[in-house]
Image 1 (spheres, rainbow, N blue to C red):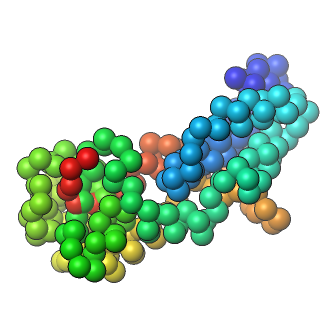
Image 2 (image 1 turned 90 degrees about the vertical axis):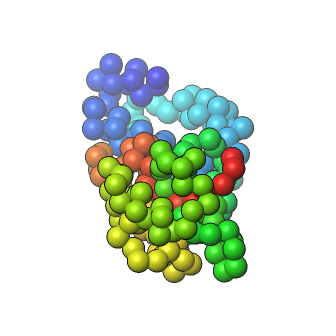
Length: 204
């Protein structure tokens, strides 16, 4: 609301509003993926709204204000580690399909984002083999599922490689010396961030 007030009063243009919201969005989504508690978000943004002044460079002021370590905005390295290793499957009720079997060397990666994808076939696929899931995902209209279906096998190497690809475009990192600024439109939206994941079946 504060940004919209500045825009209404011609203190900031649409591009700057979009860039500022990109930092806010990245802060929220990266924390979600990394498992940071959301309990303090209201307080964080209330304080930010009070601090932000019309004469500020809004995008940089917001990014800087959200960047202290105590606010837990994950860096690129922390985000990559979370995507590779954090058990994300149990965090919601979205129709996520797990790809690798819950056994042996795959067990630690089964519930991570590198092994999850969006699917409308969870009940049909169940604990089916990857070969079966591959055939079904090949009929999906989602590019990320078609990419999975193009694989001959699905194991640890494929899961980790996909996790690394999925973490690369997720938002932007906290401000630090020499950090480049982003341009509006170059960062995925929240929907794009949250649907670029891959995966197998389990009971929520």
